[in-house]
Length: 283
Image: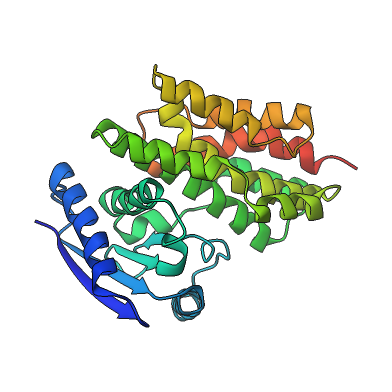
């Protein structure tokens, strides 16, 4: 049985915590992961507390990424054990099915990626070649690698949950990601004409596309619906680029029987060879 240790930050109601714990416990009970004995659940009242905690924790531990404070919940294992952090003001803005899918998604990460090794990745050879060829600063290479890694891990989580019968909430969760946010649209408007910024934007959308990929690969109506939504969700990109992003995303999400780290290396090679190198090579 998985033990969940709850820590509250701010004014969090008991019924909110109970709802999260009920969802987590049911998911662990169905999947029965032998490796997950203890999980920390940090529950934050609002975005400010959530953001401040993450910033401080990253600074203390030397974690280099700047992309996860906008999510309603995140999983990490920076201290060696799985931890799921929930931002209640963001979670409360989701409909019930998406909120349920969000909690289960993070539980899936704790099952598959609940140790520090899943947060440490060496730069894959293909990304190193792109870095050298286009003279990327190391922090940009780290950011691209981080975005590829979380995309691959999200693919694995959806594959796990969908195969355990969590279909309606995972479809709803994937749909919520495929709809471009105002931040996605603004980021692209600012990035247009700047190849490196365009690469960062596209790498960021890979998380959404690969998260949906296991459902899209399934031979049912939900898969067909998500496939259409994935394509329409890139409406703001030039048509040829949008088509290429979809093609490359499906290649990168090919369900190879490999470790997470090898999948990240394979996905990096596909993305760098088929897409990023061409974008960065524009003058």
